[in-house]
Length: 312
Image 1 (cartoon, one colour):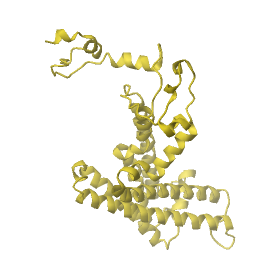
Image 2 (cartoon, rainbow, N blue to C red; image 1 turned 30 degrees about the vertical axis):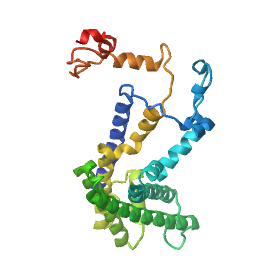
Image 3 (spheres, rainbow, N blue to C red; image 1 turned 60 degrees about the horizontal axis):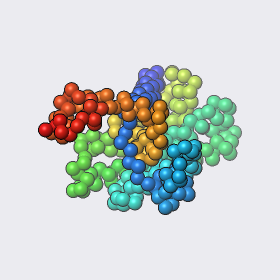
Image 4 (cartoon, one colour; image 1 turned 120 degrees about the vertical axis):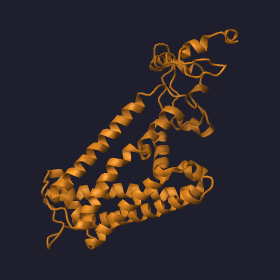
């Protein structure tokens, strides 16, 4: 059983990594997006305060433009951690969504702290017994606090989002079965982790040692009691499941911001963007409306250059 549990976790981590890589590369290879070109854009630095851009400067196309990455990352961190846009535009939904997402962040930190503890324990730091170090004791306490806070916030947010999707007449039309299932799945898995912690008397030791056995490939190492085994398998399944669903938006957002909302790269002769446009213009048009009449035979280049008089 111990070997099987370890193999399930390894498989889940592999699926997670491969799925993320495949989706990232596939999205990166998509045709050029229709850019918003709506200002302000954070990487314009001080000019962003009044909605300005490099285009205010005469001859801007002939100059090297250096985006302000500090301002950009400040915006991104506020968006990723606090979901700033949702707070500004849909406060009612934010009150449910923020605890859910922040709880997941804390659970990710919980896993990271468990990993740090596992490495320290493998290096010889005593986490139990009469010789337990103050560092180990402090790390164990912090890990427990972060884990419990993450669990409670995630469950609270999941229940709140579930009820809102069920009861809010404005949100219900945009909700399908997968939204309900995903929230229930996450809530059940997190509740199982809470149950495992309670079954172990609140100790995070079984989880820390399990991560240590993953690091050292000690597949036969004991995992723990039935609640701990069940929780680990459930977490592994969730890890493998997330990148296969729309919950993968945690990294897809990068493309939304940088390639659609903020991309103001210049289209210069012989440049990357010109090549992407030339490629897109060769796609076949399937629209059959009178103003297009593509019918799957014409390319966008033909449609764009065709005389209007030839369309009847």
